[in-house]
Amino acid sequence: MFRGLDVQAVDDLTPPGMSWDYVKRLRDIWPRKLVIKGLVTREDALLAVQHGVDGIIVSNHGGRAEDSGRASIDSLAEVAPAVAGRVPVLMDGGVRRGADVFKALALGADAVGIGRPYIWGLASFGQEGVERVLDILQSELAGNMRQAGTRSLAEINASHIVERRGV
Image (cartoon, rainbow, N blue to C red; front, top):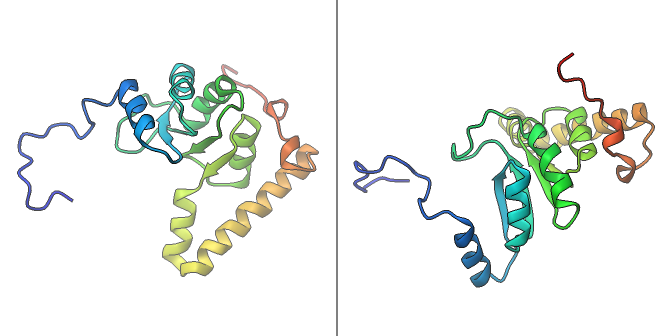
């Protein structure tokens, strides 16, 4: 990406001008959907909605910009209630099984990212591998829904999550 460029003086790839004012200016000139990835706190989620974003991706990775060490699912439990359905909330990171999808939906995600599982399927068996990964996730999610007594995605909610921290 940087071939042919003198980057000796570059010590940080995070734009120093990245601020909520920048997001506002971007929103003012960009007429299409604007989704922000990497939000992990209630405060930032509220600011994102205030600045007119069309969606939020809760993620603790990507560009090494977020290094709190918190799991995306823990951040989702804070972000989704703050947004309260005003914009879609996606969760990215740590989704490996249908149970992970169920938990994310229960905590308020509208969708999840499945980066590694589909890449593993693609690397192993091409398109068939990706399709099989999706089949497995869907089957596992259906099983989790049966175990929880939910007949539809709309019935999945936070009452299906048991908090066990400090036990």
